[in-house]
Amino acid sequence: MSQTSPRDVVITGIGIISPLGIGRDAFWSGIADGRTGIKRVELLSYVGTPGCIGGEVSDFNDETIKKQHLKTLRKSLKVMCREIQMGVAAALQAMEDAGLAPGSVAPDRIGVDFGANLMSSPPEVLIGAALKSMSEKNGQLAFDYDRWGEYGLSGMEPLWLLRYLPNMPGCHLGIALDARGPNNSITQDEASGCLAIAEAANVIRRDRADVMVTGVTGTRLHPVKSCHSHYWDVLADGPAETRVRPFDAHRTGEALAEASCTLILEARSHAEARGAKILGTVLGCGASTVASREGQPDEAAAVVNAARAAMARAGVSATDLGHINACAAGHPARDRYEATALRRILGDRADAVPVTAFKSYMGSSGSAAALCEIAASLVAAQHGVVPKTLNFATPDVEQPLNVVHGEHLTTSNGLFLKTSVTRVGQASAVVIQA
Image 1 (spheres, helix red, strand yellow):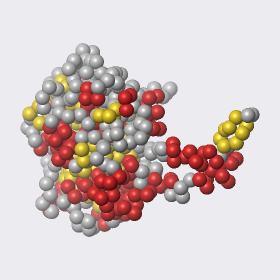
Image 2 (tube, rainbow, N blue to C red):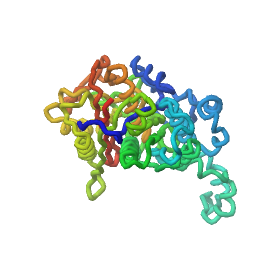
Image 3 (cartoon, one colour):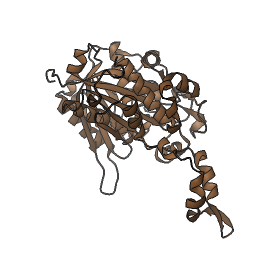
């Protein structure tokens, strides 16, 4: 690991909206208690999950949004879908956690880098316009494209599109925070979080900004996205509290969830000058996509490439790592791909380096997952532990790992590797010293 530098990128604030709770204290309380946020969905409408079980943030509701989380932006709520609302709220929370008051950073020295999934409109929003565009053909009603411009379009809300654009969290934050520095949006599903950190960190290292609001928001608890998950993923069934079992030999699938998280990234010199508490240092990042010519993804190879690149840039080896924060979600096949990758990365340390998987607490929220899981490792490091993986009982003998289970692991080593990978073989990784 290299010596410190004024342009080192440090983490000074966390904003978190997750199934475990809203805010750092509630978030840590859930992890410390070994409590899963997977439960019966009550606030959201149809989500299409087995038994209507998922990682819902039930405390983020219409009342708390207007009166607490986004009370200063109430006029903008009409052009924010739930994902955007969660993203903006988590970012405002992170700014407060970092002790950065509005106007405390020169506008051109603060930027935004935000990850999100492609956002889907709920079907009921489109029904009226779709019905107006129907016509009878061969004795059956069908959507008629020729009628759309004259009849259907008039049934749409004028600002409909602004509610579902994945770059809108960054837009709203740029305005709300008067952040006139670099501003970019990333839509790479599960890989978004680490990619956002990598991009934001490079902006700071190039001296284009002193502070980067680096966040993600995402959901798979959605009537359209749950259909995608039924088609592309494997969804677990069974009791909510034991449904998600990452790396366990008897894992049966994922649980869908929603979440948002923002980390405040800052130049070390800027953070130290204002007396900020430093929660961690971003040491290195990596990314890779691996697929065959036919489009068949190789998740294991992608994770290996991304992790090795991150570790090389950080100047660390497997011997240095305090733990690995894995992407595993309980998927029968994809957990094994990642385990294969981790064993390649760790080599003869594969049976020794602790591994934990936070989707056992929060489920699969797509683009939001990685930063939420990084936040978990950062907060846990403040308490000197690596949290256990919930519901892990039986090791997978084909690709065994040193999965933390049973009890949280006490440690003084805060250095960790975070891995993320999508179902199409895009991986990202980051090494952080907490």
